[in-house]
Image (cartoon, rainbow, N blue to C red):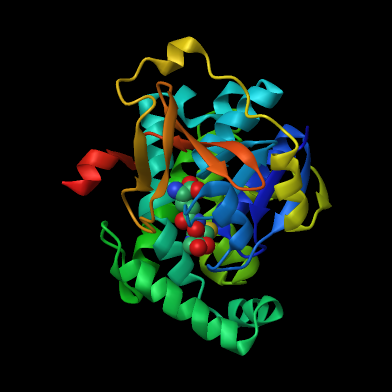
Length: 309
Ligand SMILES: N[C@@H](CCC(=O)N[C@@H](CS)C(=O)NCC(=O)O)C(=O)O
């Protein structure tokens, strides 16, 4: 069963996963979703989780690029693609790139080329809705989000660090790890989509970006979002090992939400808790049971009782 990726062309985290799929050499199905909610297909599959990308294998749905990466790592036996398999230094690096540098990169890429490309995908009305959506998301964020003025100096300092690290082909050695893909997507947004010259003064970084771009995106075929629902309806979630059903909250109604931004909760019954992930069982009419996987790190879980209190 192929992996289905729910994403949109301009999504940096979508690009993180597409590049990983290229490196992994996987055949996958692409389900394009809107740049902002409402996203009715994803609402059914992921139960409210609002970020992109989301991946799916049958009736198992993976929220957050980290759980998706762990799946890809397991599918192609490349453990270094899973964040949790990296050493502490590389994990901290990847976490900073994905969280602290994401908004500065997006803001630093606000060029005329970027606006032109956004217009290829969105009507003027949708551009307006998009801006309002993202302003709302930033205002409600629980983490400090850099402003436009801070973005450029932050990105330049980040680029100097990336440049200094690149004594080998990749950030943490001769082969790419999760940290490379976490670092790549924001800079791709600046250099390749924004066509900004910001990266030009960093030759090691440019060559490293070209190496990652050369991985391509794997073998991609487009499907209609409706087919993703059919894939979920036609499959059973994979079994959960009994060792992963020991958490005291198993069987309870819970909500799980990102703790940083876009903190919209998904609700269901806790069906599994591994060292690094939570698995929510959701019964969705027309789909049957779907298992939704979340990372534990950076997410909060509340039982229905805690939510009522
Ligand atoms: N921690 C998440 C972050 C994902 C994220 O922030 N994605 C952006 C798009 S690149 C997003 O969801 N923006 C809001 C939206 O698309 O609704 C991950 O690693 O997947």
